Amino acid sequence: MATTDPPANGAQQTMERLLRLLVQKNGSDLYISANALPTMRLHGLCVPASSRALGPQDPVQLLAVLIGEQNAKALRPPRDLQHVVSLADGGRLRVQVFFQAGTLAFCARYLPATLPSMGLGSGQLSPALRTLAKATGGLLLIAGATGAGKSTTAAALLECRNSEISGHILTLEAHIEYPLRSKKSVINQQQIGTDTASWHSAFEHARTCAADVVYTSDINNEASARAALALAQSGVLCIATLNATHTVDALLRFLHFFPESERPSLRLQLSSTLQALVSQKLMRTKSGPRVAVCEILAPSERIAQLIERGEFAQLRSLDLSQQAGCQSQAQDMLRLQNSGLSFEGAVPLAAASAMAPAWGNTLFTEVGDTTRVAVLGQTSAGNASAPITLSLKS
Image 1: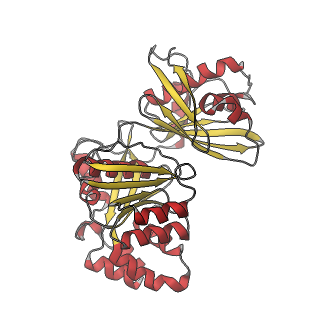
Image 2: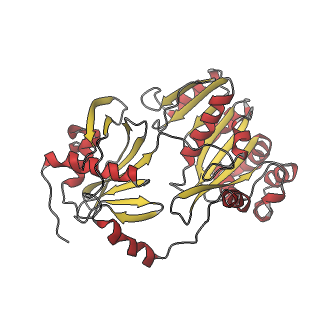
């Protein structure tokens, strides 16, 4: 496959076209690698965004448009970087930069400005989440695979509470992905490394700032799991995300962050502290877009007993549709089907490949758009660089 590097002054034009296509087609991710076609994930499928493969220097030049030339060229293997770029429409890009085969690559996830609502309408989040958003305390875990929209659902919960209940909401985040504006609640958002020195200091501060709700992004070690549990036991509603594909798997993963000798007592603490565990999947509809389908495990008396005893095999076999306060995946799918959505099974690889030609030449043939989007790059430390204006014209 032949590759050619465009001149550096063409990188901004290429980047703006890629971004426009990503937004217009409701894509979730943009993948940029040397000697490969720029690719987008649309409704769960990876499809080419151009018929021309990128050259060896293209990723650096395209990344420079987002984070600045000096920052992009300073990156060397084995360093990686996570970076958030703000768009003028209120949306954001979460950019993950890494190296592969000795060359720079990155993935940019588009985070729309509009958060999903909760209700019975087509594509809305389960209305059961609205009740959880108003809880007065406990641990609320949102679990799902990487890319399942956990942080989006967490932000939707916070915004729901912010719109309806007076109080103080504090978020602790590696990168602030969804800026929230105070409404009925006061919202303070702390970015680790910029607004506070470390996760440890952030959790210590959270204990003393009279918050009603504390949101913390991904729990991935003992320290963060212990801190989240302690906050929940103090009377705060602690909302946290966790990588796991099933409700019971999420409980086991949370417990396995702790030493084995502590787990019996931790099961008791968790059974009395857990507000709910939401397990989320993105499922493709026949119309194309994916929607979030939620399973909710709440600690009814029966479920609390199983957690306390560590009887997770029995917990896994429970029909959540028959448990008070719980919701099965099938129930949520039925709600969405009643709203007019139809789900389809897995798309065969052949079908995904067949879609590629239809997308391959769309990059430079989109309908003209005179919108201009300001992109504000940020350094890894969170300091804002000069605004970059991207002209979204054909």
